[in-house]
Length: 276
Image (tube, rainbow, N blue to C red; front, side, top):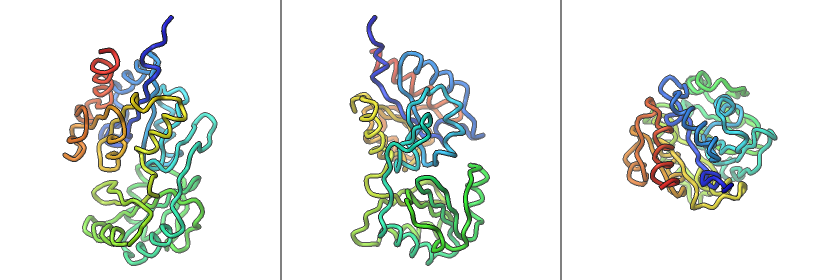
């Protein structure tokens, strides 16, 4: 019996705004499409800015069968079966110092610091509470970012009013010889990660771990923090609600995430690429 053509493929999907609908639920069409893809032998996983604890809530609902996930915006690859990080790229000491100094200059901004195995929050707490209400993850709060332990920082997310976030982003970009990347993660947040720590690089790293050729990788997302993943994947898709920058590079523009964008993308991948 010949091996299924699906077994040589790896598909990664963003969670928020892509896999989930506006009610933060997985549409049944997405679940059925993922199950069908995996039953045919395909490798499916998630790629998100969330940490393992937060991602696990959705990962464990899917028939993924142990494929490691891309976590914290590509700063890590996490094995949910072994409950361990397979690959991790932290921020440098200089980058952490810049994050602390920059956040201190913007006292109305909240910060969320993802480390290899912990989550910290600093600031006034007003903006961070929206994240916490949605994610429901364990964390430790510090009033000032300078109080946060500096071990194994994976990424720092700065939350606040849109205009203040734009000012903070400008300050981060003005740092000479910086060894971090600045990424828009939402209209009220911007984040920094080590250079080389992004969903695209992590997708290639994961493909290598699984023994999958880069030419058989596919990915779907909806926002700027998915840009490098869509650029790296051989076949890329984005949702109908995605910014124009993503639609320009995507091979396929799927339907709105409320209507099952992942299912739409997997149907395209199956019919137009794998089985054609």
